[in-house]
Image (cartoon, rainbow, N blue to C red):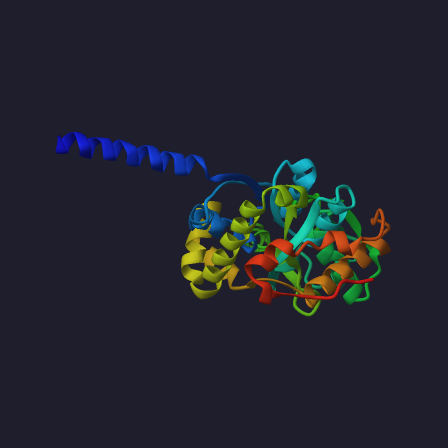
Length: 321
């Protein structure tokens, strides 16, 4: 009788566990493929999504910016990406909103050139830029900060994963991008070097974008998602060695290089006045370049409600009028 009871309890326990697993809220999220986007990778590989009751599918593309468009019509529920794509896609669908800032990049961006020793040597050359992404954000800031004439360069639209091959073939003479593409190129292609990094020019940032309609309909899942990102960020800051292992596992990337590269990133989850001012600067970039469809409605674009429920002390700003 005891054996029958034990068996029954075991079966009941398995059924209960299976039911609990089945009740996990499902999400699909997306980003690019570089270590600066580690918040999503660590949350996935480190088990933080599971911890907070989420069943998350993490999709990747050539850049985080390339994935923001999937927030339109709720094809994915969250994306980690740079500034331009968030602004542009918000103007297509007001459900594409900023939920938090995830990080800043320190000496993580740069212009790589082949057989060119200086910024001056770039004049008249073909420059690979991934239009609509952080690559373009950095290139525009680079030209502005150094008082260069944008007409002196021929811009070729190239996705970051293709830049190494493009410079190797001679399709471009240089490119504007971020790690790991800078290091991979300088290690693989003779004659290439970083002629200037982003120090003193701009510290690009990545933001967490969510689909506002989904968040409103699934408030518990949205809060759980943000709690997982908080946990992932804490690990990135307190134990970068362990976090680097999670990132290198997901990206199938050399662990030592991964650890080196995340040291160039300030992972910190917040939404403050500097976040808003930075986005405002990128809006001005787009407007000056004739690429802003319409001015941003900041009251709708910034959606801090979910993050404020998790870490209210990390949310503080005044929106532009």
